[in-house]
Length: 312
Image 1: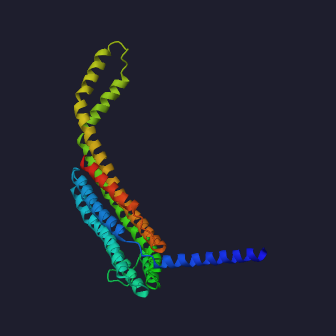
Image 2: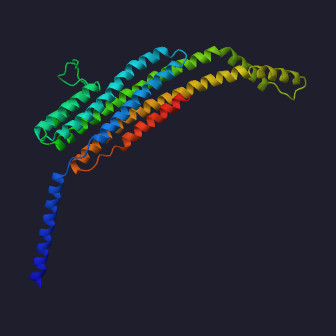
């Protein structure tokens, strides 16, 4: 009986080992997942960010005195558009590399070159590049070091794993650059709001004085009835101008809020691209489809915000 059990156990272990070998072999032979979803989502996101930049610029130009800030934002957003175009180009390069069916050092070399091109497109001056200044940033040094590791990898998967931290840092820099544009919008809105306050300063001051006199006058005191009525009538006479003043300030506040929401959404989308690239790396290792849902949702959210801005 014990011999039979031993044989059964040995047979089971052999079967388990064989199943494991077959599973590994199946994974090794399984086709690599398509990069197409990442390419499509990147194209969609690039277009959405470009559209959002135009919408934010329009909002600035609709502000009295916002033309100079709009010109500044136009120049700076152009660089952001180039960064998102670089993300799209990188996704296309990955698609081409995988479609070529190469492996080993040749693939790692191409992955490293693609990440270097991405960094350049995002405005990162890597050490040793013609764009690099005398002092290279710590971020550029880190990205360059990761590219070197990716270049020395022995397989596609290893190269992509090594490239991920570099991609994360590049996307972080893109997001940070977009956040910086928030200052331009806030400055323009503040200047416009200050101008409106100055334009209506006399009326606002007059209303405050009337309100102060009304609050300081006791309506129950004999002889104050006429004074109260005159003050109330004078205050009512400023209601139309005051409503106009509030409406203009509300419009600026609404445009500021909408513009900042667009900038924040664009910045967050850069982070989502980093996450999508990480999902690609995992999909390559596990031979399963790439999940780019968060990237698609980011592009859709930006477009929704653009539509809301246009309705203002």
